[in-house]
Amino acid sequence: MTISSQTSTHNISHISVTGRLDQSQVKALEAAIQHAIEQEGNNIIVDLSDTNYINSGGLRCLVTGWRNAKQQHHNLVLCGLNSRLQEIFEMVGFDQVFTIYSNPDSAIDKLA
Image 1: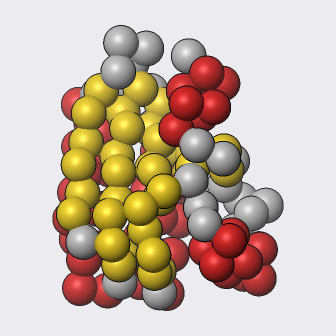
Image 2 (image 1 turned 90 degrees about the vertical axis):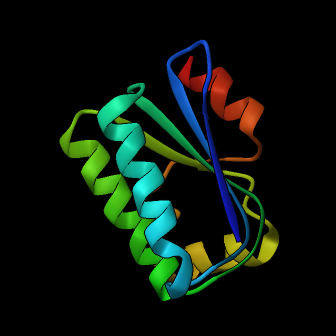
Image 3 (image 1 turned 180 degrees about the vertical axis):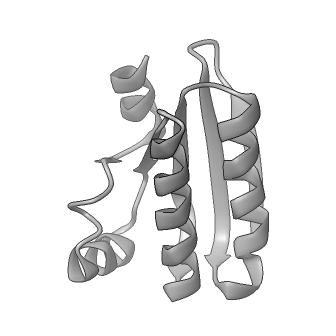
């Protein structure tokens, strides 16, 4: 798994997750989200377009990041979930917690 982060001209932090998001990799994502909350814009996009697997540790990391962002009056949204990830999010009810966009461009358009 790799995590990359960039900030757009609209003060939006875009964090991309590639590969598997499992317990062994959540610390890197937690750090990227925390950095975005502390140092960057008010809006954070976690792009899961290239994520092919997520387990409970990955889900927990995203919820924790979402909560931390809300506490600091930031928005954390998701985008790019494949059909399997979408199914998992619906099954555990996270589609009701997170705002989910189909792709990064639509998320940026809505948040800008």
